[in-house]
Image (cartoon, rainbow, N blue to C red; front, side, top):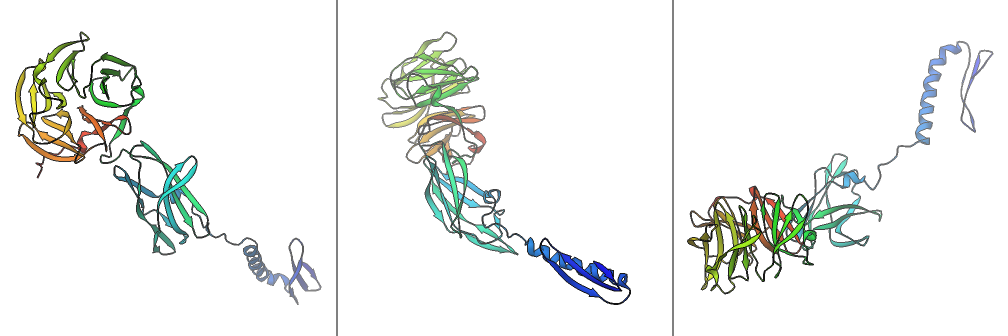
Length: 386
């Protein structure tokens, strides 16, 4: 500002230009200084807004926003993909949504859908709900959800998706087939005593123990074809060639008992379980299904009709569990009332041996080649089956 002869000429300079803003004539220059400063503030503010305009929100939202999805396995080979209420965008910028898997670093789309929007004041709630097929032979899927935007770009949300959460959300792998020896990749039946897991592999491959502390696997006894084992106290009972039940004594490390009752069954010894001082054996003799009850010394204590076609056996608190392959159901039978309880879906689409230890159901998943566990609370129900 230059002041001379009661005349004030006011200038505003930027880097390259000099602007004459106002000339104040007459006396009392300081009287108008307040007015000048107000005008100057408005000019500076206007110039600042032109030089630094407000940035628009990005067309592609942050991934933290796009991760607001829910994945739920609703069948052995199906996952449901759904948006949550927190998936809110500033514009309707998503035009299409795909779902697929990572194959060698590339996205392979398996299904897709168009989303819908719900207006929320100045923002939009993005909505979608669709399903994608799963490979039920895999344990984990490299899942990718792809958002396609109106400007031609896309954004991916990637995460590992377990495939063993149906029908029981508590299901987890317990041991994998890496503990197996003798080049056999499949478990067939399992049981547990304290810190030792006992198993019989698929085929004529004997009885093994796996120490859960030392992680050591040991073969206990070799025998021919047979599918079933059952542990009790210091014994492991095993099915030899589907027609003989033998007892392996863990104290003496020998087979010390043969139960000869099954010699005429003709390959229809269908399951074994031990609990509460009883050895339960599921058989089909002369076309009739039944449960035979023995004590641990091999004495027959009784026979219970079991009018259902199933395989493998587990026992807990007077309830027997077995697998109905035709219906893919976990059959449950009350030994005292001799009635069936409501069945449940099998823990695996193609399951093998099942046993109960503590408060967990142990199950063999043939495809995924692991022994899994499920919280028994997800399975138990005392209502009769209709």
